[in-house]
Length: 556
Image (cartoon, rainbow, N blue to C red; front, top):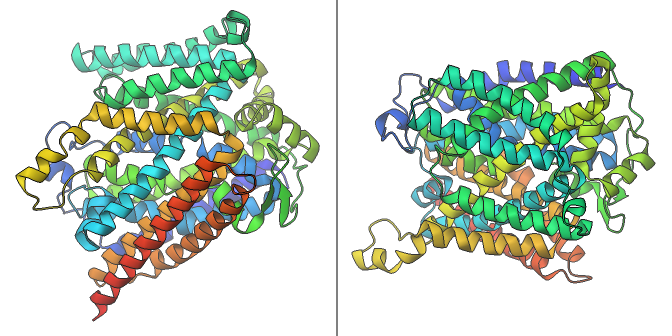
């Protein structure tokens, strides 16, 4: 097998299924372009605001992608490239994309509300609270995991640290000029997009290597970056979206599309041969630490969440995207199509390391990490396009770190929203109940809580240990979102097979994985991850039980 053939097969299958299965889902769910979306009905110019499909697609994809579709496949290929490819392609088409489509649809049909609010409507207040607690726990793991990844990337690639800081500064200036000084968007784009690529060059010339600059060890440098990252997301969580999140997501989309097109072109021209085994066995050693043994069933399906199926997407779909959707016909390209594009990114990531031999693969992952492995692999292919390997690696690493920072910003803000929703009283609550929870709904206090807990997880664990727990929580979140969609479809008397079967698969795999991770983190005891795994498992069981009772009532 070679990379060009695999990528071609994947893209063709995604296109065919988008055309036919996506159209089937649109008819099944009853997509109606004539319906007014919440962006029009509740337009307030702040949260609810119609956006062009192309613009919203860019914002949505930048938010859901992050580094997940890159890291997961690179770790998951340790079982062999064939099991990883099967899960990425079939999981993306029949589970992940269906999950995103249904989450966006049910939010659109419920005034753009979050999944938590929808659960309260269909399952009840207790169901809402369980789901929100679950979401908060999962989001805290996302923040901890991705903060570690950014910190390690900055240590291993100090040029990326320089470029990333410049990127943030560029985005802030862009936001001020466009949103407050009325700089026309085309002119701003023409000025600031080239500045992004100039920042990559500056990074290669002035790498911010803390070990050399202030004489600290690699571990100390990682911890310093972690501290700075948590300070950054504390600010990003409460800052107005126009000053950082919107402008950076917009500029980030140009990096994102450039990376995907560059990677596809390099793979098609190079046609790299695979040296990783087709199948490496049902049990393999953790490729990063080499101590824990991973079982293909169920851990492959949680080690590769993004790119195949990710519960985090349901929070993005119902948190921000549903409030900006201009027309229901855009649910298909944004809800279903963006997930398929993420599947393409996952295949690119897998191909980037498939040419390594098993020993090389383990060595580069344990010493440099998956992001460095991806950037080095693709930049090596790019040499056939006469692009410098160092410049190519810096560009790819910056793009990935920008992805991760976008995910961190989104996750921090969503965590704050979720915590504030948890302390919100049920519908019809008294004025006294509202006053009692006022302090907890303060965005600064909520952000401080989120940063302290996720920071504790980040400083007490490491990526190799947190990633499987993050993956399991992410897949459980996807299962619960699919369960919610099932309840909504049952209530609307719509066929549920397309969402119910994915729910059964995801709940089985994720609960199975959490049980295994409980044992892994029990001996020797890793208290934060053991507690997180146990809490997630209990919350999921409770919510499924409440939902089953509610579904039975619908059928009576």
